[in-house]
Length: 627
Image 1: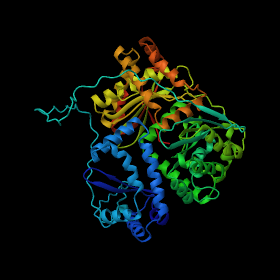
Image 2 (image 1 turned 30 degrees about the vertical axis):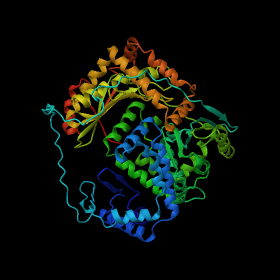
Image 3 (image 1 turned 180 degrees about the vertical axis):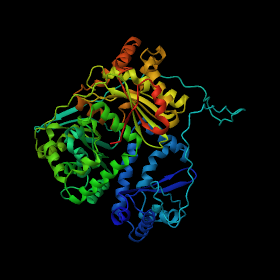
Image 4 (image 1 turned 60 degrees about the vertical axis):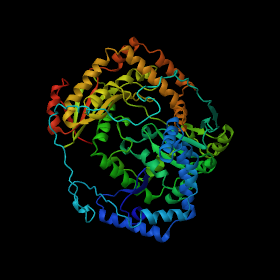
């Protein structure tokens, strides 16, 4: 609080400790406001320690942390994978996987005296390492007494052939084992997907709610989704929808931002809100025993905005700073420019939900109030809920929202036509000195609702839809040019992009683009029977695990509601996978991977990378400015 609210040198602070087998680490991470002195930040940290020692903390503070810890504990073992990790962890560190039943109780048994004792022993007056990361040329911001750490930047040079290190000679000493670990256990039969029962209810206001009872863990997850988001932004004030969700989480009519945050933490819950390109979502995760109280807070956030001018000014400033930072982030630049090229400047979906410095600078708090009044309506909203709660209790609880939320018609604008791509074209955005190049290749393809969308997704799987996709196997595993290369379709109710992408070492930009070109073309000639079998096995098996957690089940409910799908739509997708043939796969690849109908975009260092790209056969690269 002293760092954020007191000295106001940072918008937020995070701190955590990690315990390992031999030692642990306690760490603070602080991203400051622009031009802040890190010497002042260091002083603020020490002042916070002193304040902790003198003011200590209350029993309420401790109970709040325990409630959050309990919720997170159950979230961590929601999946089979999470359970296996935890059991293996306990087996290694405590000698028994059965420690899982004792672990959470140990946290719940912690006392104030325990916390103060640990602070005195491991944190107070202990040696520490402080690192200062400042913008280039801003040495005056570095914490006093710092020693410069020599970071050697790798020069951008032509790619040299890399030699793989030969395996060390001699027999490797293996850890004794009760069984032969070199023999892979045989696979069992493909798992049968058992879909959960879904219940539904519609209130008179038009609000709908759907749910799944899942009683394995004492948890509940739910969300309220409103269609709209960026779609309903005014073209000259893009960013209003994004600011709305930030603003609604900053207190309510009767609670300050701090009071709201404390109320959520007291319940051990998490409540978050975000703006997407086509929707606004508020979602919550909590212990089942706290559901009614958490729901009451969500209703308060939705229906009783605070509209505090001071908080609005702070959020505007924070958003402007984020936009400014993004203008130096090649990954964000590539995404934003790519959308502009695919949708065209006049299309609302060509914009980032954040908006631009210019559009955000024009927004007032009255713009947020107008957006809220016109678009927040149960007529375009749906609720999804999963967890240890009955249909009856959920319907009864959400009835309060349905009765109090006044309904209104929401008008969605007509979308303008998008540009057609007559010929593949190469675009380049210069980020001087960039050590990586961001590559994006694609075009506007299918909406999610198109009957061929999911066949196309299956077709793409071996190309770039998984870690074992050919793009990743070549560019990462074989060549070592990137940490990951991928491709995929992203349609919604509107046509979405097919995108093949990677962030590659600068000196491999040309070679990487050649590989993308060659592999996209090669893929249209068909795949092997072995690759098709791999695709089918991987997708069918992953489906069985996809619906085991509350988060997965909530995603399924929201997908059904968003696209008006049948409850067993997953079964339809499985049939598409199982009936895919080599001929159908080749047909889809030739149809949806048009060799001469894609945008090629590179964001990187023009001084070293632009010239070679003229040899790609895509014509003269068109150099664009960062907007």
